Length: 139
Image (cartoon, rainbow, N blue to C red; front, top):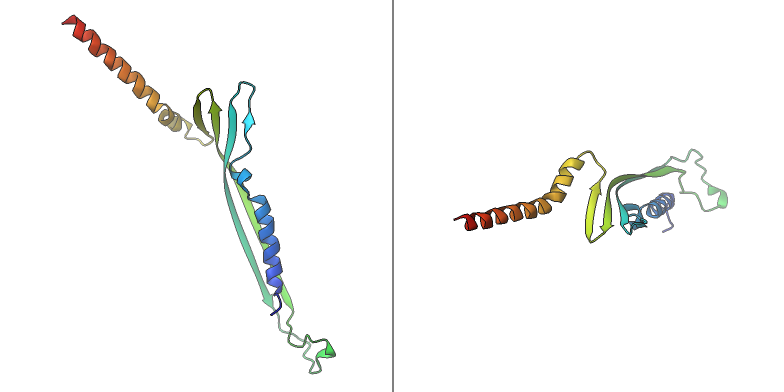
């Protein structure tokens, strides 16, 4: 069975999408800053694809077939398309003995509080521990 024309349309569109959506599109190339930090962009990638076609009725019904062997072949019309959306989500910052995720969206305050929670808990434990030691000496 010979290839249908829609297969060529789909193959071309899918190969084009494959070239656009790769690993470096989602996790970008790292950039090193002069102070030694490495910044890695993180993005959200969405893509869509559609293809369709139709075979039309042959209006030239010729019983002889013209001798070219295309007696039963119907005219074809079709198309395909696709789209890609790349949306930045965050930056991963690696350096100075720590890893930080800096989000791009509007909820930065909440994310910063969550990011700082372990440090705040450690400081709170140190304050409580010092208070307990001071009370033991006063008795």
